[in-house]
Every structure is written in structure tokens, then in C-alpha cells.
Length: 202
Image 1 (cartoon, rainbow, N blue to C red):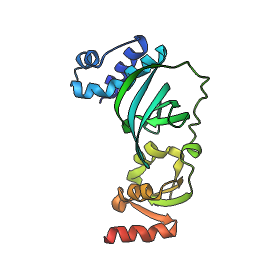
Image 2 (cartoon, helix red, strand yellow):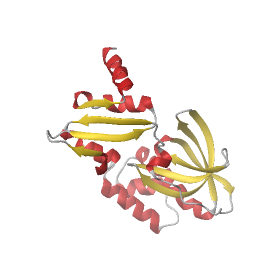
Image 3 (cartoon, helix red, strand yellow):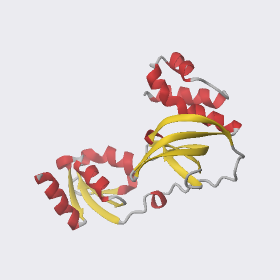
Image 4 (tube, rainbow, N blue to C red):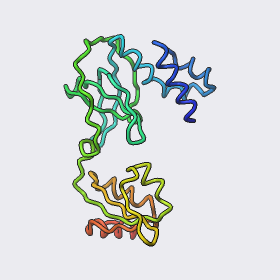
């Protein structure tokens, strides 16, 4: 969806207490199926009235049904998240919007809690464990900046980019590196170089 359209939608949601998906679809000339993705923004307005929401959430360990008391809508790491009290885990949790399905507002109400702000530091959310060093072609700069920020690499005399970061999940790291094809050379860790070689052979 175009950024100007998204900004317009957010502007309306900030000004009005309630708005329906069909209204947004008509105003911004998008199909109603696309407008279905506005459901969470509408839920954000319901939070003021103390309404909880239930939804199906997809996580690395599997999917589960969640009921949360939503408090904040957050844009971080190029994605949207909701910060709320999870009744299943009995704690505050950060949920990624594009992993939420079958979202529906609940008629159950809740008393507003004293809400701590989420710790959104990379170290807190992605605790690391795998120290990565890799050389990228200069043409990959835009993607590294978008995904990790401008401080994640050092430009080398030959124009290549020496990337350094701590990664949490080995499988995701391999998938990410392979998406660059021959535009990246992994330097460390050595054992992952061997795994990538095996993946390429397969």
C-alpha cells in the first residue's frame, strides 16, 4: 500500500473514535479485502473503551490463540507490532501484526493497567549468540541500512561492505544470507560457511 495512503488512514484513525473498514475502503479506493488489514487499527480505537481482542498468532514454536489487552501500536524494524497484556502468558508481550489472523474485538472489558513501555533495543528482542561477519557488494547497502541501520557495516577500500552483527536464529540467518546469492561472502563463523556450502550443493 502506498505510504501516502497509509498516512491518510492513520490520520483519520487518530482523529475519530470509530471508523469501519468499508468506510476506509471507499475513501481510499481500495478493495474491501485489502481493507480487512485495517482491523487492528480499528481495534486500537476500541482500546480506549477497554475492549480486549482475540486472535490466532503464528510464532516460531507454533500457532496459538491469544486474547490481549492492547495498549500501544508500534512501528519498529520495518514492521508493525502491538504491545499488550497477554492473558495466556499473563505478561506484557509484543505481537507482530502480520503474524496475526482471525482478529476480532471481544466484548470483554478490562481495567487499564499500569503499562511499562516495551524495551525495544535490538539486544533485548534479538539477544544474539551468533556473531556474524560478512562482505557484501556495494549494491547491497540499501538493504543493509533498511534492515540493520547505517552503522552495521564499514566500507572497504575495494567498495565492499564489511558487515558485523549478532544474530539469534541460525536457520533465519542462513535463509537471509542465501537471499543475497553471490553478492555476499560469509567470513565468520566458520562452521556456517560449511553449512552454506552444503546447502548450495543440495
